[in-house]
Image (tube, rainbow, N blue to C red):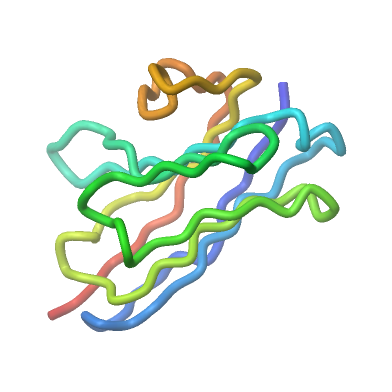
Length: 126
């Protein structure tokens, strides 16, 4: 299975920005859809953003629309999550994940993603 490694997390003040990276081990990364999920202590792992295999479709959770941007660079085998105007409630471990299929019905369902990174911590202080 493709191996994914997240990086770019850290501690920032409210209103600041971070860019998370998700590096893939395979040059066939272009054949995968990518999702970002996050999990705060004591809570379920929640959908954040997703991009389709071709990159023609992107979807966001309502809580991050207008603030976060997902992108995919197939030449670098890397996906990104640009996070702006960060809020304390964005604090969580962020995971990237890859899927060989994408659909309107499943893009936000973590069960559709079969390959997961180890997660990177994002902490937003007030």
